[in-house]
Every structure is written in structure tokens, then in C-alpha cells.
Image 1 (cartoon, rainbow, N blue to C red):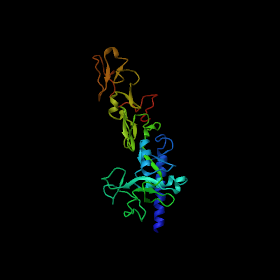
Image 2: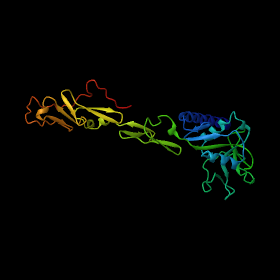
Image 3: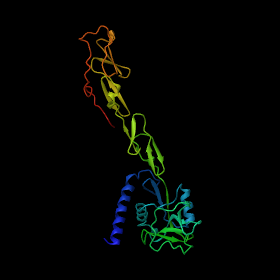
Image 4: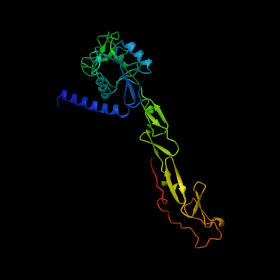
Length: 290
């Protein structure tokens, strides 16, 4: 496979991944004119300004100039300018020369952090050209990066955290907590967090010792209900099933592993069965999820 073919395949694959991630959770997570990718919102300008002014404009929106950390993100950025007036203009990203060490480049103000990912053109950066201290992407040329004078004018890309909690029912009706680059669900009592705290699923209390019910246990969203068989009266939310025939004699069955008859007048004909109840009460539908 030639270098160009391999490069094209990698770009195609990265673009496909980007398209999936972009469509997956767009919704209302980002403001209008912003684009969503992997937990963050991106703003692609159509006007030009200097690197410093571009960064200031990004900060005014609650974000900053973009930090590019993967091929997928780089392909996403390059693809967004395919039909823009910025196609032939340089586009600022947040990488700049380290003012404390001119041979190194840093993201924004992270002077002590060496970037793990870069996409320099093969002739870049030109460390002998100390006037080119800022970084641009040139969508019309390639997806690679170029050094440029910070006082030059270019388009720019801002990025800030997306608020996925603004999307409708993202946690299935449970409280949603936004965190940088993601979100998590705070599940109420009767639910448990799954899929990395991004979903709340109902707990089926009936699976654990029949929910403490002496007869039937019916699971409901976030809760459960105890039902008594025909001929018994439900008491204390179903945790006690009292026989209607012998209620005056003190006959009752409590929520324990076996049935006890407390009536002193009970005979062999009135003893309750200790056999397990049917799977569900007549006329009831057992719901285990929602």
C-alpha cells in the first residue's frame, strides 16, 4: 500500500468515526452555530483576526482556542471548512511557541507540558524562523499544521465543554450532572447507574428474596408492590397477608421464609401452605423495566 493510499484510508476512517461521534449526541448540548464532538462544542469562525485576538474572542464565549489531540479531531476540524471562506485562509489553533524555551511548542498556557500529539507538515516547524510563533491549519493545502506570525490574520476555532444535560431525557428522567467532556446520571433510590454512569436502570427488588413479600412481588419503576393471594387482606404495604377467614382468630402470615400461623384455634384444615406462590398474581403483569 502506497503512502498516499494509506494516508487516504486513515483520513477516511477518521472521518467516519468523527461523523458517528458528531451525530451521536448533538441535540441541544451546544449553542447555535457550534458543533458537537466527543463531549465538546466547536465554533468555526468566518472572520479573520490575529492569534491573540482570536483567543480573546474564544474566552469571551466561555472557551479557548482549540487543542487538537487526535487524528479524529484533526480530521473533524479540517472537514468543517470544506465550503467556508476560510478554506484558503489559515485557521488558528491553540498551539504556540514556548516563550520560555523557543525550541518547544505548547498548548496555550501549558508551558510545562509537551504535546503528545502534533500534525506538523514535514517541513514544519521552522525553528530557525523565530518570527513564526503561532500555529495554523490550512484546509486548502492539507490537514497538516504550519507555523505563522502571530500578528497575521486568520480564521480561528474555539472549543468549550458541551452540556449534554441539555439534551432531552438523557438520563431517562433521572438527575443529570454535567462534567468536563462528558456527563453522568445521578440515579434516584430504586435505580442503579450503568454504562459508565450514563444510564439509570431499574432495580428489580423482587429478585432478592421476593422483595420481602410473603405472597407476590410486582416490580415497578424505582419500587415494588407486594400483593396477597385471594382470601387474604394486605396489611403494612403487603408485608403482612392476613387471612380473611381467620382474621378474628389472629391468623396472619408475615414476611419470613416460612408461613407461621399464630392463631391458637388453627387446625390442620386451616394451616397455610408453605409452597412457593405462583410467578405472578392473577390479572397482574410483572414489570421488570421501564
